Image (cartoon, rainbow, N blue to C red; front, side, top):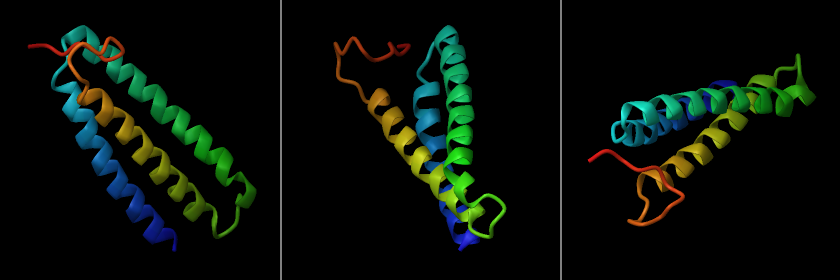
Length: 100
């Protein structure tokens, strides 16, 4: 079960990488740096949140499964958020401006 959940996390990570690239490739250098920093902090948050979520089974055989499941769930959610940003409608002021 641990291996299956970890494989699911790897699949979610591949989707995240594609979503990340879809935005990163469109950004000007200053924005790209901001985006990279934000994503690095998001990964730190995900790690801390999933460590906490799996703390109830710390040291047990299910800890890896619970952690990977959390990592996959949060990674898919972040990918969906990035997909929304990458596909903003013209005039949406809450979205980054992409280089032309």
